[in-house]
Length: 169
Image (cartoon, rainbow, N blue to C red; front, side):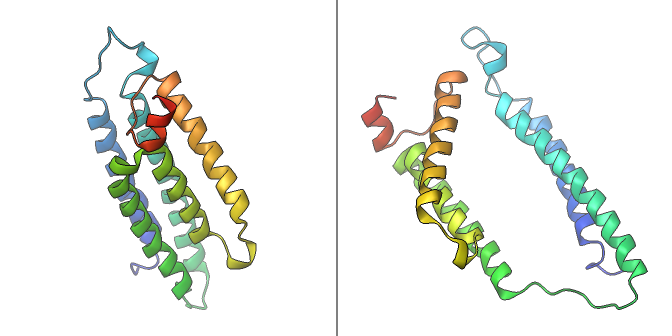
């Protein structure tokens, strides 16, 4: 059995282990129980993300097992290669994520998130189906919803930038 046949299974197992460690460390985050309600502690989002990662890991394991069975039944032996466009999308995605993390302390949550989302949508959409106005609207609305959910609903601080200063947050 080659690595190409079981790469989804291996990735799923590794990510499931990672999500377990992530959840363990998420529960060790110190909170201020007297100042914030139990549902709005600093652990809630890391815990939800860890559970989501575990669920997606299990789905990846299941798909890996299905692919292995399908490839064992397929006698053609031809492997689908990743084309150059897919590889560049992965490279650009990592570059944009790193850039997002670097500029967030300077630009703040709102501006850096809007820019990140627009760039990510451009990277992942086919050239003939790009709608920049729709990308901008989705990025602004999603960022506003997340900002309100964290700042007002969960009462958690997000990195401040020029827009947050103008809004008084």
